[in-house]
Image 1 (cartoon, one colour):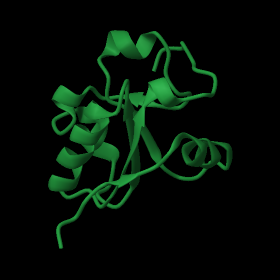
Image 2 (cartoon, rainbow, N blue to C red; image 1 turned 90 degrees about the horizontal axis):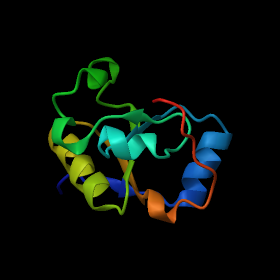
Image 3 (spheres, one colour; image 1 turned 90 degrees about the vertical axis):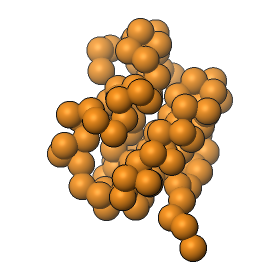
Length: 108
């Protein structure tokens, strides 16, 4: 059986955030998109640099990673890349367009 990423919906992600669960939240949109509004606590690692980004250096292969983008397409692609690179706890939260909670505009 091939390893695969899992899906997490907005309410499940909000619960993880509220409970301060130990996970890394990654916004895979471009920087300018992220500045327009992002989920509080997210780090910005654009899809095109997801594997080579220095931000990943401190992340272990078994850390829980939750990714999102605008519509869900890039987060799925980035999740697949991370699984193929050996990360084992990868979740795609889909797109921020489906996030019904407040967004932050602070720099990530």
